[in-house]
Length: 289
Image (cartoon, rainbow, N blue to C red; front, side, top):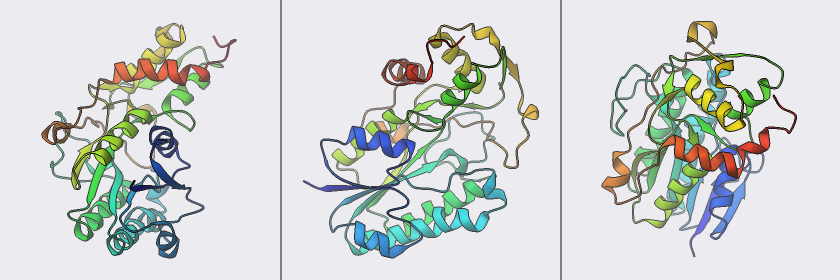
């Protein structure tokens, strides 16, 4: 059986991958154990002929505007290190990337081959990593872009919203950022389908289907919690000015899954229903409003 190495196994997606791939021969490492910026840790971790899933990244979107060196060190140079070691070991790489490689100005789903144009340092660093990977391993690397991730454990939009609702009568949530709420377990399942397939390269968008605003997402969470969704008040991004602009449009297309004979992602509402019963409802205490 082929060994699956997971880099970044301590994160929210990394934890979902560990659960989904429990029946595989898996070797997992946290950022502290295997650091992309230290090639020697990759050399010791990756075995010949294996599959490496890279779920490690510098993800502090706002901080990256001031810490560009740190962002590029992990997301670009670090991925280049991974690609170099994987090539030497004849290993295949599945690399997790982001919707931030796009500028968020579209009004139709971004195709996998749509022109990239990052508007943030974080997005630019992730795009640089993608390019390093494709140049080094053109036939043995799959890029999996995702967005609006949530899951348990970890910090995510549901956790933030449900926690804030315990102490506040109303919450303001933006309506002018549109994306695809995406359960980490579904992304893990999509990555599993790539591992089990004969596909060895390409770009795949691993988000749940459909689209919603953060306001839509928050209202649905309130409904699932049995709370009044009218407590979620609409506002715009002007209310929450941040150092790094958030994409107004983060809807990704999914053509390459079906093109390669793989299951297309399901709708975000269907995934959220399962996610609620499986793990999110634990975020709501018995005495919550």
